[in-house]
Length: 484
Ligand code: NAP
Ligand code: MG
Image 1 (cartoon, rainbow, N blue to C red):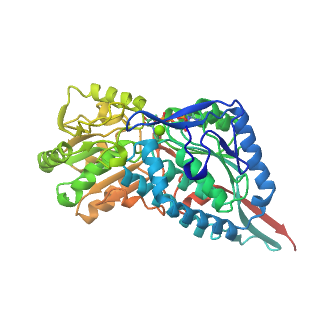
Image 2: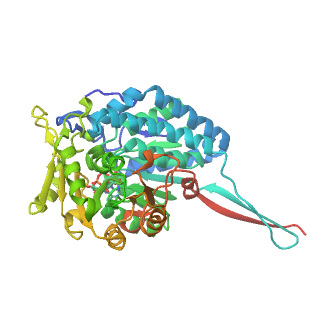
């Protein structure tokens, strides 16, 4: 099939500024999960392609990219952000078709990608070291330097946003990147690489090698020429990556998802909270690392919240991504099977709300009806495991201590939210909730690119987004000069 996303060649890898066929000349098919059709073939990159990409990245650091000033890196990222905006409709269409994301949500991802470029463009020349008062006769200062070659292994759920936050920060700080997008969703990564060339990013500063995680991803993780790895995806693969990176003593940033709660107290403004309670669970069909899959409600409001959430669920409709229904398909039939496996484990639970799959939705699509369960015990598997589908559980609680115990009672700790009009309680809860981000009387804060993001526990470690990410993508050098 011939699909040329913004001029990119999907059956090839972007290495050293050129589209190159994979060494083994093998391809994978990219599926549109809205109807099961094949969108196009993509390269099945292997170790040889990763070797070439790392070599191209090293050459970029030795060459023009390594000599590019921080201000100029910022200008390139700014141009890239403008190009993303110029092509927002094409990028949103590619993402909607590739991932099954409803078109409006795909468009929001494009705007986020452009905003990441804008933010890191502005930040590139604002990161600096310090001078440190020291012994007489010394001058001591610190330098913030790029790691060198950074590896970026990203999932299929938010390709553009994750490219923006990891590749954007890595390029701003002068690293050269090798990106391995998910096999299920590569098109916007490839289109982005093409736009980066147009923006004047020097050859080899961004290389993209599509392929299987077990081949291209594993080769990138093992490669001795890679100096930092940024990974977003499953806990299982995250552990594997951390173990492998340990052999080369390479730092890793892991963003591994969560089981994020929203805690609704008896004094909450219910009207304000209700849209957030449901939307944070069904956005991107629940395939969001920071999805809110657990709703904890004080017993005095419990019945009312369940009834109101159920009403909303019963009105939800799942259908093709380009037609912009409340919920699109899941990314793949494999993901649909995973979610259906969880739903089967919830059969004995109280199903209080269920959305509909459109009657004329294509039969080859990977649709799952959004499902709301109430009265769920906090230890039930549906209240403990990350489902990554449009499924939420409602759990009652008696008092603040119990709410904190339930909220913190999973192995994850990515984000958490608390709905209360009591100011003192807001401050207490912000301290007590175990999470990398806490929201008071909102959920997600609109996803601002400025806001540092990352987890604790099984949600991972390290921070991306915001200015904080620039520290993670640099290493600190202390210089001590003895001059008498
Ligand atoms: P995954 O397997 O962890 O995939 C994430 C990325 O890692 C993909 O690019 C994948 O490549 C790559 N990968 C897989 N095996 C690898 C290996 N041995 N070495 C290096 N890279 C490797 O996640 P998934 O299979 O797509 O989804 C499974 C579950 O992960 C979901 O149900 C969800 O619970 C969780 N998940 C979480 C997030 C998040 O944002 N935290 C995102 C996605 C998924 P390929 O996929 O191309 O093989
Ligand atoms: Mg796809």
